[in-house]
Image 1 (cartoon, rainbow, N blue to C red):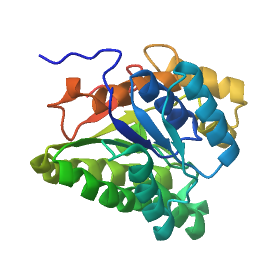
Image 2: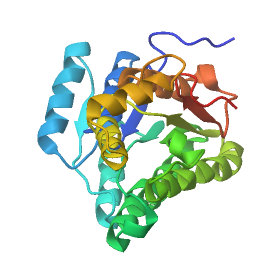
Image 3: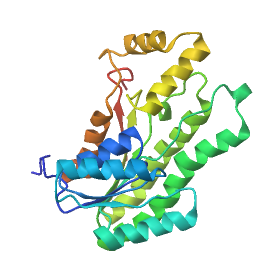
Amino acid sequence: MIIFKEDALQGRHILVTGATGGIGFETAKAAVQAGAAVTITGRNEEKLEELKQACEEIAADAKVFIQKADLTKDEERRHLVEEANEVNGRIDGLVNSAGIGGGGPVKDLPEEEMRKIMELNYTSTVLLTQLVYETMRNADAGAIVNLSSLSGLRGTKGNSAYSASKFAVTGFTQAFAHEAIEENIRVNAVCPGFVDTSMGLNAIRKKGEREGRSFEEQMKVVEEGIPSGRITKAEEVANTIVFLLSDAAENIVGESVKISGGSVMR
Protein backbone atom coordinates (compact mmCIF):
# COMPACT_ATOMS: atom_id res chain seq x y z
CA MET A 1 0.00 0.00 0.00
CA ILE A 2 1.34 3.43 -0.95
CA ILE A 3 1.60 5.92 1.91
CA PHE A 4 2.36 9.62 1.92
CA LYS A 5 5.99 10.34 2.80
CA GLU A 6 8.51 13.16 2.70
CA ASP A 7 9.84 12.23 -0.75
CA ALA A 8 6.37 11.61 -2.21
CA LEU A 9 7.15 13.58 -5.38
CA GLN A 10 10.71 12.39 -5.88
CA GLY A 11 11.58 12.35 -9.59
CA ARG A 12 8.40 14.21 -10.58
CA HIS A 13 8.16 17.51 -12.45
CA ILE A 14 5.44 19.83 -11.17
CA LEU A 15 4.27 22.99 -12.96
CA VAL A 16 2.83 25.58 -10.58
CA THR A 17 0.97 28.56 -12.02
CA GLY A 18 0.26 31.66 -9.98
CA ALA A 19 3.49 30.93 -8.13
CA THR A 20 3.89 34.57 -7.13
CA GLY A 21 0.69 34.38 -5.07
CA GLY A 22 0.58 33.09 -1.52
CA ILE A 23 -0.80 29.60 -2.20
CA GLY A 24 1.24 29.01 -5.36
CA PHE A 25 4.38 30.23 -3.58
CA GLU A 26 3.92 27.77 -0.72
CA THR A 27 2.91 24.95 -3.06
CA ALA A 28 6.14 25.23 -5.04
CA LYS A 29 8.13 25.11 -1.80
CA ALA A 30 6.18 22.09 -0.56
CA ALA A 31 6.67 20.28 -3.87
CA VAL A 32 10.43 20.85 -3.70
CA GLN A 33 10.46 19.61 -0.12
CA ALA A 34 8.70 16.46 -1.37
CA GLY A 35 11.48 15.91 -3.92
CA ALA A 36 9.99 17.37 -7.10
CA ALA A 37 11.56 19.48 -9.80
CA VAL A 38 9.33 22.50 -10.30
CA THR A 39 8.53 25.00 -13.00
CA ILE A 40 7.14 28.20 -11.52
CA THR A 41 5.29 30.83 -13.47
CA GLY A 42 3.64 34.17 -12.86
CA ARG A 43 3.89 37.76 -14.01
CA ASN A 44 6.20 39.13 -11.31
CA GLU A 45 9.74 38.06 -12.19
CA GLU A 46 11.23 39.49 -8.99
CA LYS A 47 8.82 37.41 -6.91
CA LEU A 48 9.65 34.32 -8.97
CA GLU A 49 13.36 34.83 -8.26
CA GLU A 50 12.53 35.17 -4.57
CA LEU A 51 10.64 31.88 -4.71
CA LYS A 52 13.48 30.13 -6.51
CA GLN A 53 15.86 31.23 -3.77
CA ALA A 54 13.43 30.01 -1.10
CA CYS A 55 13.24 26.61 -2.83
CA GLU A 56 17.02 26.36 -3.02
CA GLU A 57 17.22 27.05 0.71
CA ILE A 58 14.98 24.01 1.23
CA ALA A 59 17.11 21.82 -1.03
CA ALA A 60 20.46 23.04 -2.37
CA ASP A 61 20.09 20.81 -5.43
CA ALA A 62 16.50 21.86 -6.14
CA LYS A 63 15.59 21.97 -9.82
CA VAL A 64 13.60 25.20 -10.18
CA PHE A 65 12.84 26.64 -13.59
CA ILE A 66 11.37 30.12 -13.90
CA GLN A 67 9.21 31.03 -16.88
CA LYS A 68 7.40 34.35 -16.67
CA ALA A 69 4.06 34.15 -18.49
CA ASP A 70 0.72 35.82 -18.99
CA LEU A 71 -1.62 32.83 -19.09
CA THR A 72 -4.33 34.79 -20.89
CA LYS A 73 -2.12 34.77 -24.03
CA ASP A 74 -2.02 31.65 -26.17
CA GLU A 75 1.58 32.06 -27.33
CA GLU A 76 2.81 32.48 -23.75
CA ARG A 77 0.91 29.41 -22.54
CA ARG A 78 2.43 27.33 -25.34
CA HIS A 79 5.92 28.68 -24.72
CA LEU A 80 5.59 27.93 -21.01
CA VAL A 81 4.70 24.28 -21.57
CA GLU A 82 7.34 23.77 -24.26
CA GLU A 83 10.12 25.30 -22.15
CA ALA A 84 9.05 23.46 -18.99
CA ASN A 85 9.13 20.11 -20.77
CA GLU A 86 12.49 20.95 -22.32
CA VAL A 87 14.21 22.06 -19.11
CA ASN A 88 12.77 19.78 -16.43
CA GLY A 89 11.44 16.89 -18.49
CA ARG A 90 7.84 15.87 -19.05
CA ILE A 91 5.35 17.53 -16.74
CA ASP A 92 3.99 14.97 -14.25
CA GLY A 93 1.83 17.32 -12.20
CA LEU A 94 0.00 20.58 -12.86
CA VAL A 95 -1.19 22.97 -10.17
CA ASN A 96 -3.57 25.58 -11.57
CA SER A 97 -3.13 28.19 -8.85
CA ALA A 98 -3.24 31.37 -10.94
CA GLY A 99 -6.25 33.52 -10.19
CA ILE A 100 -7.57 36.85 -9.02
CA GLY A 101 -10.26 38.10 -6.70
CA GLY A 102 -12.56 41.04 -7.16
CA GLY A 103 -16.09 41.77 -8.15
CA GLY A 104 -18.81 43.05 -5.87
CA PRO A 105 -22.59 43.39 -5.86
CA VAL A 106 -24.16 42.65 -9.25
CA LYS A 107 -25.63 46.15 -9.51
CA ASP A 108 -22.12 47.64 -9.36
CA LEU A 109 -20.21 44.96 -11.31
CA PRO A 110 -18.34 46.32 -14.36
CA GLU A 111 -18.42 44.07 -17.42
CA GLU A 112 -14.67 44.46 -17.93
CA GLU A 113 -13.88 43.24 -14.41
CA MET A 114 -16.30 40.33 -14.69
CA ARG A 115 -14.69 39.21 -17.97
CA LYS A 116 -11.18 39.57 -16.53
CA ILE A 117 -12.00 37.40 -13.51
CA MET A 118 -13.56 34.68 -15.65
CA GLU A 119 -10.77 34.75 -18.21
CA LEU A 120 -7.95 34.22 -15.73
CA ASN A 121 -9.68 32.08 -13.12
CA TYR A 122 -11.45 29.74 -15.53
CA THR A 123 -10.75 30.10 -19.25
CA SER A 124 -6.96 30.31 -19.00
CA THR A 125 -6.96 27.38 -16.57
CA VAL A 126 -8.77 25.19 -19.08
CA LEU A 127 -6.63 26.25 -22.04
CA LEU A 128 -3.36 25.64 -20.20
CA THR A 129 -4.65 22.31 -18.93
CA GLN A 130 -5.35 21.24 -22.52
CA LEU A 131 -1.69 21.74 -23.42
CA VAL A 132 -0.32 19.94 -20.37
CA TYR A 133 -2.87 17.14 -20.77
CA GLU A 134 -1.42 16.29 -24.17
CA THR A 135 2.04 15.70 -22.65
CA MET A 136 0.56 13.62 -19.82
CA ARG A 137 -1.49 11.48 -22.19
CA ASN A 138 1.68 10.38 -23.96
CA ALA A 139 2.89 8.89 -20.68
CA ASP A 140 -0.50 7.60 -19.55
CA ALA A 141 0.09 9.19 -16.14
CA GLY A 142 -0.23 12.46 -14.29
CA ALA A 143 -2.08 14.49 -11.69
CA ILE A 144 -3.79 17.87 -11.95
CA VAL A 145 -4.96 20.00 -9.04
CA ASN A 146 -7.13 23.05 -9.67
CA LEU A 147 -7.47 25.83 -7.15
CA SER A 148 -11.17 26.42 -6.61
CA SER A 149 -12.67 27.85 -3.43
CA LEU A 150 -15.49 27.51 -0.95
CA SER A 151 -16.93 30.21 -3.22
CA GLY A 152 -17.00 27.53 -5.90
CA LEU A 153 -19.34 25.44 -3.75
CA ARG A 154 -21.78 28.02 -2.43
CA GLY A 155 -22.54 31.64 -3.18
CA THR A 156 -22.10 34.56 -0.78
CA LYS A 157 -23.32 38.14 -0.84
CA GLY A 158 -21.39 40.54 -3.09
CA ASN A 159 -19.27 37.76 -4.57
CA SER A 160 -21.02 36.81 -7.80
CA ALA A 161 -18.16 37.26 -10.31
CA TYR A 162 -15.51 35.45 -8.29
CA SER A 163 -17.95 32.79 -7.15
CA ALA A 164 -19.12 32.13 -10.72
CA SER A 165 -15.52 31.70 -11.88
CA LYS A 166 -14.79 29.21 -9.11
CA PHE A 167 -18.05 27.30 -9.67
CA ALA A 168 -16.78 26.98 -13.25
CA VAL A 169 -13.46 25.58 -12.02
CA THR A 170 -15.26 23.08 -9.78
CA GLY A 171 -17.50 21.98 -12.63
CA PHE A 172 -14.54 21.69 -14.99
CA THR A 173 -12.69 19.58 -12.42
CA GLN A 174 -15.55 17.11 -12.08
CA ALA A 175 -16.33 16.82 -15.79
CA PHE A 176 -12.70 16.60 -16.92
CA ALA A 177 -11.89 14.05 -14.23
CA HIS A 178 -14.17 11.54 -16.00
CA GLU A 179 -12.18 11.94 -19.22
CA ALA A 180 -8.68 12.15 -17.77
CA ILE A 181 -8.88 9.09 -15.53
CA GLU A 182 -9.31 6.97 -18.66
CA GLU A 183 -5.71 8.02 -19.41
CA ASN A 184 -4.64 7.31 -15.80
CA ILE A 185 -4.53 11.05 -15.07
CA ARG A 186 -6.19 12.22 -11.86
CA VAL A 187 -7.92 15.60 -11.66
CA ASN A 188 -9.01 17.15 -8.37
CA ALA A 189 -9.60 20.56 -6.82
CA VAL A 190 -8.93 22.20 -3.49
CA CYS A 191 -11.53 24.58 -2.10
CA PRO A 192 -10.14 26.76 0.68
CA GLY A 193 -12.05 29.44 2.49
CA PHE A 194 -10.28 32.60 3.63
CA VAL A 195 -6.51 32.09 3.52
CA ASP A 196 -3.85 34.29 5.12
CA THR A 197 -2.56 35.58 1.78
CA SER A 198 -2.68 39.13 0.46
CA MET A 199 -5.63 38.12 -1.74
CA GLY A 200 -7.50 36.49 1.15
CA LEU A 201 -6.90 39.33 3.56
CA ASN A 202 -7.93 41.87 0.93
CA ALA A 203 -11.20 39.96 0.43
CA ILE A 204 -11.86 40.22 4.17
CA ARG A 205 -11.05 43.93 4.08
CA LYS A 206 -13.43 44.55 1.16
CA LYS A 207 -16.19 42.56 2.82
CA GLY A 208 -15.74 44.66 5.94
CA GLU A 209 -16.02 47.87 3.92
CA ARG A 210 -19.31 46.70 2.41
CA GLU A 211 -20.64 45.90 5.87
CA GLY A 212 -19.33 49.12 7.47
CA ARG A 213 -16.72 47.36 9.60
CA SER A 214 -12.99 47.88 10.06
CA PHE A 215 -10.62 45.14 8.92
CA GLU A 216 -10.09 44.06 12.53
CA GLU A 217 -13.82 43.92 13.19
CA GLN A 218 -14.47 41.93 10.03
CA MET A 219 -11.65 39.50 10.79
CA LYS A 220 -13.21 38.89 14.20
CA VAL A 221 -16.60 38.20 12.56
CA VAL A 222 -14.98 35.81 10.07
CA GLU A 223 -13.01 33.85 12.65
CA GLU A 224 -15.96 33.61 15.04
CA GLY A 225 -17.89 31.94 12.21
CA ILE A 226 -15.25 29.22 11.77
CA PRO A 227 -15.39 26.25 14.17
CA SER A 228 -11.58 26.06 14.30
CA GLY A 229 -11.51 29.75 15.23
CA ARG A 230 -9.09 30.88 12.53
CA ILE A 231 -8.60 31.29 8.81
CA THR A 232 -6.44 28.84 6.85
CA LYS A 233 -2.68 29.10 6.40
CA ALA A 234 -1.30 29.01 2.84
CA GLU A 235 1.01 26.16 3.88
CA GLU A 236 -2.02 24.04 4.79
CA VAL A 237 -3.47 24.44 1.32
CA ALA A 238 -0.08 23.64 -0.21
CA ASN A 239 0.24 20.45 1.82
CA THR A 240 -3.17 19.29 0.64
CA ILE A 241 -2.22 19.97 -2.97
CA VAL A 242 1.02 18.01 -2.67
CA PHE A 243 -0.88 15.08 -1.16
CA LEU A 244 -3.32 15.10 -4.10
CA LEU A 245 -0.38 15.09 -6.52
CA SER A 246 1.15 12.06 -4.83
CA ASP A 247 0.50 8.36 -5.39
CA ALA A 248 -0.98 8.16 -1.88
CA ALA A 249 -4.07 9.80 -3.40
CA GLU A 250 -4.24 7.47 -6.38
CA ASN A 251 -7.98 6.75 -6.12
CA ILE A 252 -9.08 10.29 -5.29
CA VAL A 253 -10.68 11.45 -8.53
CA GLY A 254 -12.81 14.49 -9.32
CA GLU A 255 -13.00 15.62 -5.71
CA SER A 256 -13.33 19.17 -4.40
CA VAL A 257 -11.44 19.05 -1.12
CA LYS A 258 -12.70 21.66 1.33
CA ILE A 259 -10.25 23.43 3.64
CA SER A 260 -12.63 25.47 5.74
CA GLY A 261 -11.80 24.97 9.40
CA GLY A 262 -15.22 23.34 9.65
CA SER A 263 -17.20 26.30 8.30
CA VAL A 264 -18.63 24.25 5.42
CA MET A 265 -19.50 20.64 6.21
CA ARG A 266 -21.29 18.56 3.62
